[in-house]
Image 1 (spheres, helix red, strand yellow):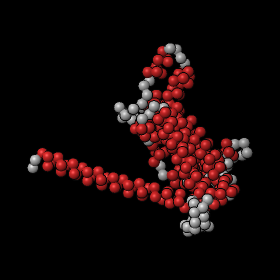
Image 2: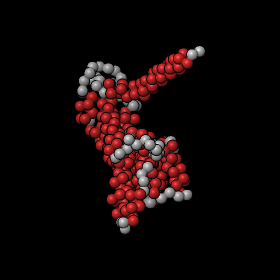
Image 3: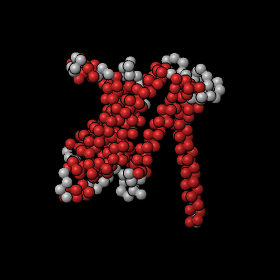
Length: 303
């Protein structure tokens, strides 16, 4: 067999493999995003029941906006996401700085706890938080005790949603700082700058893209947190996922799909801001993806 024939056979096999991989990729994307596309389409169903198509119309969106229960659920989700993002950003940023700039024997154990938070099933977290809230309220009860504040639904949501998000922010900030040279910080110290000045003028600007990206991801993760919300929320603070879960027991209205579509657009907008912030901070596509999953990008991946 000639070299030309062998080369042609290899090229043919490679083309067939690439074609099969392309088809498989399309199938996977359809499998993942077709249900979302169906919800978006049925959000324009101008009928009484979601699953029974009547005609195209915008009434589901007007009904959703006019429904005070839906508005309250959305506003509760937005407030809970904002509070959880603030807590997660502060806690996660400080933890990420410590991991990147003060490594030691404790680093492995701390990272193990961070990854444990990420892999622990949400149902376990939800039940644990519910028991903790109840017990803490009993032990330190009273109108002026710390346990009193745990009776507020938003406080419960802040803490519950911030647990997972704090681990995400920690890994993002750690990955950002681990990929940056410490020479600027060392030069600042050599010029007799205090640690506070070095942090404010050198470290914080360098890590700010990761901090903003972590905050936006924490906000997005809180918006669709259903399991923890359903366990720890109270009647006066019921977020959107809990409202949708309770609506499943009755006839689903197109207004549910309409508001879900708006929440989806808000989530996509937040994720797009994450990508923009990281790219404007000097990260390449590979570096941005690496930071989001909490690892350091491979050398030479920068633009």
